[in-house]
Amino acid sequence: MTQRNQEECHSSYSWVSLTLQERGLYKHVHQELELKVSEWKGAQAGLWRSWKCAVSTPGCQSYRATRSPRGAGSVRNRPGPGAVMRAAAAGMPQTLSTSDMVTPGSLSPPPTEPTDGEQARQPLLDGAPSSASLDTLIQQLVPTADYYPEKAYIFTFLLSSRLFIEPRELLARVCHLCIEQQQLDKPVLDKARVRKFGPKLLQLLAEWTETFPRDFQEESTIGHLKDVVGRIAPCDEAYRKRMHQLLQALHQKLAALGQRPESLLGADKPISYRTKPPASIHRELLDICSDPYTLAQQLTHVELERLQHIGPEEFVQAFVNKDPLASTKPCFTEKTNNLEAYVKWFNRLCYLVATEICMPAKKKQRAQVIEFFIDVARECFNIGNFNSLMAIISGMNMSPVSRLKKTWAKVKTAKFFILEHQMDPTGNFCNYRTALRGAAHRSLTAHSSREKIVIPFFSLLIKDIYFLNEGCANRLPNGHVNFEKFLELAKQVGEFITWKQVECPFEQDRSITHYLHTAPIFSEDGLYLASYESESPENQTEKERWKSLRSSILGKT
Image 1 (tube, one colour):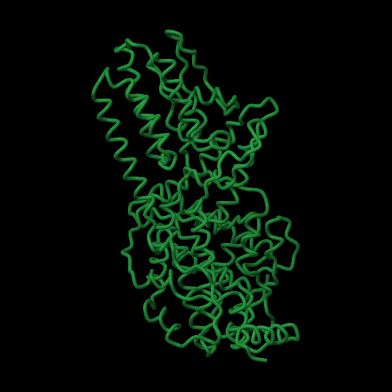
Image 2 (cartoon, rainbow, N blue to C red; image 1 turned 60 degrees about the vertical axis):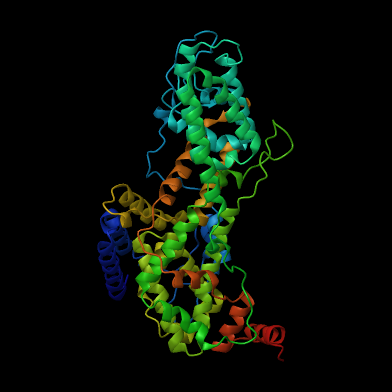
């Protein structure tokens, strides 16, 4: 590494240290950054190492580009959001290990002696996760007078079991087993026994309806609840009252989930302007919000609002495959609207960033917008909002933006290169995962609500969960379900639930969030046309495309 590169590396590292200290994330990733700086200097790799070298990680193949400073006479062939998503979808998943929400030891229910015809309970796990038949796993979910499943087991099984059995069918089987084992269909009930069993049954139903309320959208599921609780109510009228409270809370939760804010129905469809839009449209963003930290806060507000509507079951339902041992039909067909809407929001933010950069007529103004978004991305990183960070970087990486050499020549790119390196897909996004672990640890030890914020790069989270779902959905040769994979999936999704429940500490500025949701954005063709109008095509391919776009969009020859 040259002396100049060493100075650049040290300077860049100092900037990262300063900003992380200011926002409280520094102490959790300091050691990792120190190690990386040492490795960069020792291996003569440098922070701005060339991306020409072959990348061994499959996920990096579609993201390779030649690293060179913008404005230095060479243009970097940079992928758009689609390529970034393809890079995220490749490679093997890496499960995070920042949460101890689910541990193997906590999932083994204590064995009890069989009483009055009940089956003896055998631990599913003996110091380590194991496999079992679906029937056995369902039996472990059913409480008795002397047994109640661990909370971690309830969440783990209710989350992953829908790969093999629909929730309404699972509830029907659980209620049937309760009635059968506790002899609730007899004319005369054993009141002493029912009084021990009743609170456990109501606790199970409460946990189920609280965590997975969408499982109870059908009237038939509510009917099962009323039937089984109605059978134990004669032993204690408090059970009926508790059931009424449970159903009331369930209806309120379902009503809240059904009320999708207007922000979730924003104008996501790109448009093609017939000509460059009036300057008033461009001025709107900087006039409404000229402070990068404020915009980063409002982006965080939007992210958390959208995350709150995503149910944990959507991560499983998005990848439900056919169970060859059950039937030829998919186990679940319900759409995952909230998850899909969140992915669309990421794409919209990418295109909004690119649109804002390509709109100004003068390169000085375009450079100003680029530097503004670089500062916004930096603040998103410090807050812990990695999804908005990646969307901003992806928007600036789109080809219509990256080809603007004259514009980039006026931009101070050092900070952008650091952020881009942080989200580098090399090593299955190793740098990003290190920062995410730091943010997760900060959240666990947070002294303020601002330190609790963790918003992961969502497309990479989906990729990780996809591979975990693949492992869960595949039965073992003996027909058993791989409960070890259930645990891994529950751990990942459980972490996400913790993060999405954080209340946004920033006051909402509706003028800014309204703009983020409704501002017109260019289509891909519109971006290319605006880019060519800003800086003329440089080669024959670009000239032919420019001519075609002018003809199709502007009606000019």
